[in-house]
Length: 130
Image (cartoon, rainbow, N blue to C red; front, side, top):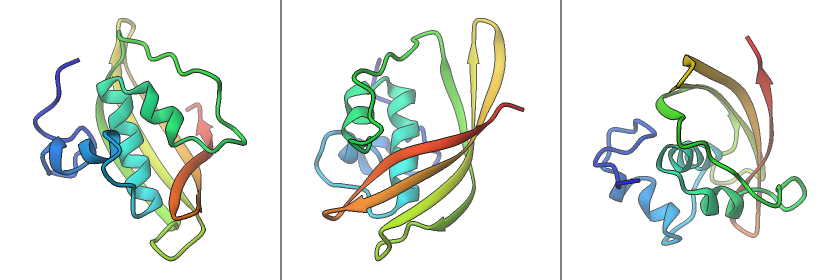
């Protein structure tokens, strides 16, 4: 997949200044929201390795299979609870819109994150099926 010009997380920054450095391992996310945005962008650009690297070991799957037919269109952060640079845990609520061969859809999730040894990781999320 070609590298996007604008960051898929919709920060308004170029990909190479926003989520790109996180995906390349040049730095880590400063907040739970920044990690969530970078994980959304990893789905959008097809970076399964980054998703696995940023998944907490206690819940990490052995593999992540991304569907090339899914196009991630938009990310809306709906709220955060803690997850700042001095916190050890936090949640981020978001809605991610996508399209696939069956049409358009969205994923609404409240994700849990923990920070250990200075790095944020994704633990799990509660998905709203509606």
